[in-house]
Each structure stands twice: as C-alpha cells, then as structure tokens.
Image 1 (cartoon, rainbow, N blue to C red):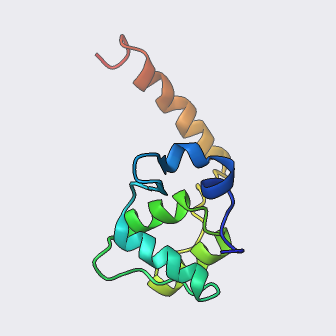
Image 2: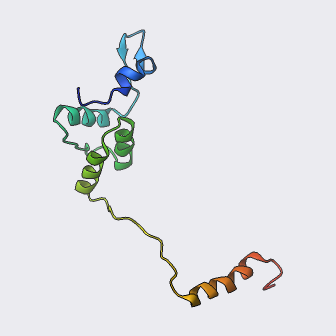
Image 3: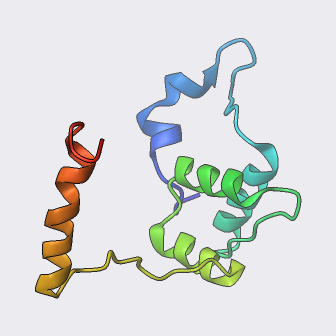
Length: 113
C-alpha cells in the first residue's frame, strides 16, 4: 500500500470512517475497487473486469487517483482513440468574407424576412 495515494486513509479519514463498525467504508463500485486493489498489489497492472462498463471504471480510476500514465496505458490497451481533435482554421480570405456576409443574415431579424 506504499504506492496508494494518501488521501483516503490519511488526509481525510473521518469522511470514510464508520464508527459503528470501526472500519473504513468507501461506498464505491465494488468490482472496480477489486481492480484498483489488484493494481496496487501487482505493481501497476491495471485490468478492467469484464462486467464493469468503461465509463464507470474510468470514473473509479479518477476517484482513486490512479496515475495519468496508467490510465493512458489502459485506454491504449482497450482501443480508445487517443488523438487530439483540432478545429479547422480558415486560411483563405474568401472564406472569411463569406462568413462576414452570412453573419448578418443569422443575427439580424429584419434581414431575409
């Protein structure tokens, strides 16, 4: 547990401490927790259980503060598309002029009526 983040057992223990049972209790997704526990026990092997949806698993990884590099490695292995999406840049003057012409048509209620 030396590799585990300190926040859930040291920095905020009261939030997750159950006085009645005298134990820590995290009301989280159990199958995902088992995978996170295996991650720490195995020295960094991250495996998503088959029954856990991707979005739920990624939320749990964020909650348990799994390192960004481990999450990226997991996404690559699972086949997530990891490219940056860029917005197209207008490079021609004609395109900008066309946009300037169309803008009043969409913003002024009296034009085009």
